[in-house]
Figure 1: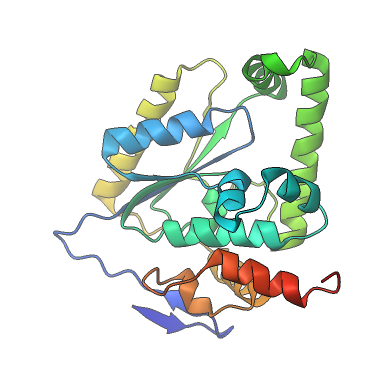
Figure 2: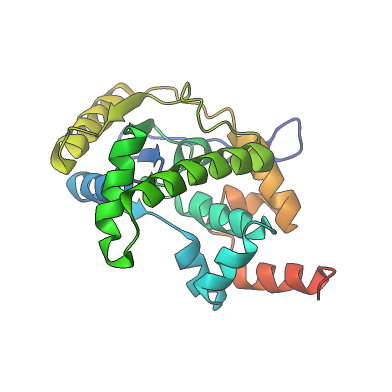
Length: 247
């Protein structure tokens, strides 16, 4: 069910019967905190659909090179909006775990988790993961710090979100000294508790973000709350690119 709020944007109203199973988990973090592993582990344990949609996935859907998105992303926010459109629509499934930097702000979740690790620990993990690229640990550390600040500024500009403000999250887990299994077990335990207690978790950012995305992509705002309404990201991209001054 959906209604219009005072901004004119449809607002989803979830009606859950006593015998229905609905559980949505949002896992956010900076890079190097183990988000992808945790999301996959939690999804497998709780038998939830897993959503981890990135620019690489968007490049495939738009049929353009990933490197093209990398070059253009700092100049055009269309890639952010299209990625988040897909993520938000995927999160409308009744049983889902979503892993992304902004999942906690973009998803109407029953449980919001922030994964934390100190900068040095994150840089070490990224360095080990990218060992074949022959970059020094110091350069990875600086690049990680720089990326954090760039992302913070971008999300603040695009959505008015301060990614350093974790006040909307239910639990914050320091993953530095925990194994992937331990991190996942903590999330699973919290999710089971949240599901049993049916917490009233209202996401105060959703209406604003939905309006921004629908306005910027010039789409029916209902597609952000009803995934039975079809939408083609490639068609949106081609239309907006065709209307751009560079075309």
